[in-house]
Amino acid sequence: KAGVTQTPRYLIKTRGQQVTLSCSPISGHRSVSWYQQTPGQGLQFLFEYFSETQRNKGNFPGRFSGRQFSNSRSEMNVSTLELGDSALYLCASSPGTEPSTDTQYFGPGTRLTVL
Amino acid sequence: AQSVTQLGSHVSVSEGALVLLRCNYSSSVPPYLFWYVQYPNQGLQLLLKYTSAATLVKGINGFEAEFKKSETSFHLTKPSAHMSDAAEYFCAVRGSNYQLIWGAGTKLIIKP
Image (cartoon, rainbow over the protein chains, first blue to last red):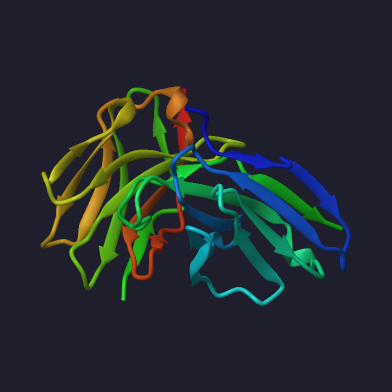
């Protein structure tokens, strides 16, 4: 089976722009979680989707949003980019219904740089 | 509430020496515990997980971890470090609402 794929791998944007990141989970996985990883803050949970429904959201401003499609692919969007949004954005998929007890399979991440 | 503490943001060991990465947790529900590894410029990969079946859990690449309920610990060990073990290691515990609670990570440095 193919692993989790994320596109693009690298992205450079300027402040005020918006960005959309894409994640394709492993075939058959319906749960997708998103994380922001920075050197200072570590792994921060953004949100989790299951069968097109957002079941949980982390403590991020409303500029961060996401969605999941019927084929389980997921996108996250960040509007009005700030310098502090520069980070590695990781997507993970899980095979069952409970990502907090299942193994999570991570993609390689999208490296976002905001200038 | 659940939380995870990893002692030491950086741990340095010599090649061939014992690796010990510390993880302490708090959990109000029966814990599921995980160790993930992240190699440079890659996503995270599961090393091992505890699901209450056995207190000593063996993982990939020769790593193992022991669940100690009385100490609320889940430390990761490997008898003999290899250069290829250089990476960042994350401990995580089951949280609520479909979420894992993550430690801050420990970078393992292997000295030749």
